[in-house]
Image (cartoon, rainbow, N blue to C red; front, side, top):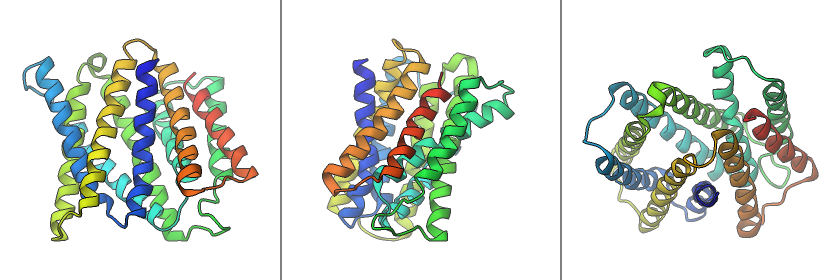
Length: 279
């Protein structure tokens, strides 16, 4: 359980890094390039420690593609945050993207959903509807901002789907191959994007990038360690619910982001959906 708590904290730090980046007037792209580069080096060293530098082609290709999708999700979500979206509420919506891999499991892998999983999907949709007031002060997202949030939502869900797909390949023995390739793809995409803009990386972006790298590496590493002692049906819902609660708390303390009564109901639906979909 200690590993799971640490993983949850690191995930929450990663979530709050979006808001910190926006508040500092920095860009998430160069910061993310540094962060994913740090995470790449960490997992590459871990792989070298455990096995020779050989990669399972399928897992590596899935990882590279997933890294590009993850970069797209990160950059579009940051665009929404930088336009004034509240961190806690929008992060809860992004976290509910687990409905994407759950839906793929039902329709692609022909996994028959249980009653609790069906109820979880319904509660997830209800939660998203109740959390629709993403901006503060009664302001609403523009159609472009909704599109950006949807792209981030869908991209995050696709990352979850790819991760589930890799876990089905020979019992998930190639997770490190997948993670190395994933962070390589994300790092290359962020680096190329930064290079195309021909701009220097700001000192704040370097510092935030290191924090992002530690958060990404720590979140994944401690999750993998936790799964050696706790089943996924327990670890994933606890980690997800914990990250939402910590991120909302962080948003309230650091940026005075208030949550309305309607949104409390939405968050309750989101948390219940996460638990039910993992039962």
